[in-house]
Image 1: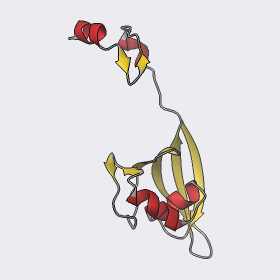
Image 2: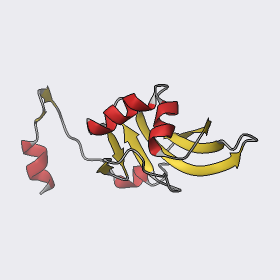
Image 3: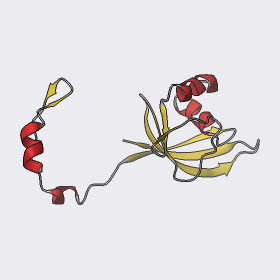
Length: 120
């Protein structure tokens, strides 16, 4: 099967490609890299967190959700009031992929300090 794919997969879209076989042992020590971030939000709803991440208002985030630009746990998000759970993975088109770690602490005014990772 690999020979068939190598001989017949010549283009991806309009771009000409060349495939070469590599040893998978080269990937054994691969480790994904993250950027740790913390943000103060009023709740752990996904629309609130996304609004802080992309520095916009919640209405624009709701529009992104309606336009199917937010993927949550590898499915298109349809509910903007979703309450994030630990280790939820979400991606925002044009902004990247993120992993929700959880609530780290609360402020005196009952806001939440949330920790999340941004995939690099």
